[in-house]
Image (cartoon, rainbow, N blue to C red; front, side, top):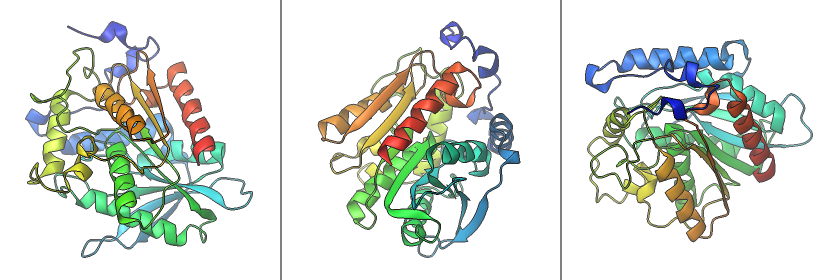
Length: 314
């Protein structure tokens, strides 16, 4: 069975050539290189200027690198977005999405800070999450110096970065150090069961392209490391397992009808509604994972929707 004919007609030519990897062959380094180079080329990131800083990392951990994208015109302190890049938490860099960050900063007037967190399997949970949280603490302390509004900080991420963004929002809620204005989750990776034998759902029309069941299970195994299912931190690893979602900031969540994460994302949105969290959910028809990166009218539509959400929520 193939779902190729269901894919958005303007994206079919590109969808099969999106950087991918075969976990059975162990070609993670090749995937990392191809993802960084391919995404950089798609988004025109190599032509974008940004500021780079190295900030304090978590306790007893290395320093963290961040990239700063300022809006071209500042009318007072800007809303602030801490961005977490995608790549299944096993690949990706903030540099590869520089083109998007520069465009979003210009369109919304937001100050965007993208964090270069440590990847699995070299650094399993909670290393990457604590890197992002350290960046949040630094951003809260230095937002004013950067031209931002320290009372208007939001978290945003895509795919694996969407998982870390959601987990950071949970940490911020529970540690009570930085109140978040919003969380913006772009086809987030939230449930480590997806693609495995204990998946809550397994619709065969999802997950054929870009990010597959095998890739997902491989990535989650790398990130999880030896963390036990009964560990109190398990809900921060995989936010689908967090029992209490109340007290989270207003949420904007998007996913695709052909995306492997569709059902876990819809379920998470439903649970947010049940917890009283103001939540917008958009499921795009004919959309595979990472569909906003594939040039097309569909990608332009989602980019407009994301910009509008940022303007409204932040």
